Structures are given as C-alpha cells and as structure tokens.
Image (tube, helix red, strand yellow):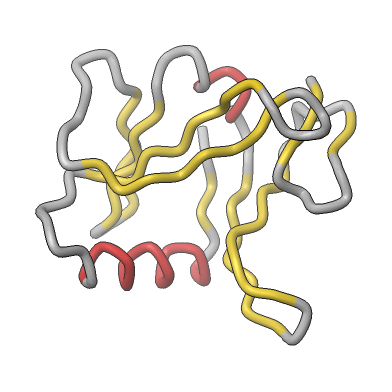
Length: 107
C-alpha cells in the first residue's frame, strides 16, 4: 500500500500530538484537480469510515478510501524540511506524469 518514510512518520506524529481533538488517523486521498488531473489530499480524521482501507504504522494509522487506494498503491510519502521548502512529498510509481510542484499527477 503506502510507504511512509521515518521523516514523514515523525511529522505526522507531531501533528497528531498537537491536535486539539482526538485523531482516529491520517487520511490520504486522491481527488480530481491540480494541474495534472489528480491531486493528493491529507487530513487528520476524528472518525474512520467503515469502508476505509486501514494501514498501521506504529502510532500512526493511515485511512484510505476505496476509490483512492488503487492510485496510492506503492506510493512513498516523505517529509522534506529544507531551504527550498517544507512539506510532504509524494513519489507515485503509478503516475505517468506529475507537475513541477509534485502535488498533482496524471495516471
């Protein structure tokens, strides 16, 4: 399914610990949009949906809806903190192309 680097896991754990509400998991989803057709979305969720694909990474629970799951198969999520920027980076082997910012892709 989805691979999280140690940097991504650490960042997600910090966001969960800093949340004002209980967190059931980190939702990673694909939606239409962006300059290449599909874009990544991430959010902390309070509730798991019955049809979610659930992946456990120690203290982090990933939640993926069934429509996004095939497009996220084999994706690696990293967290970059550098002079050029800070944020999550997606490496998707299913993408036939992606935009320069790395936040959208086409399949």
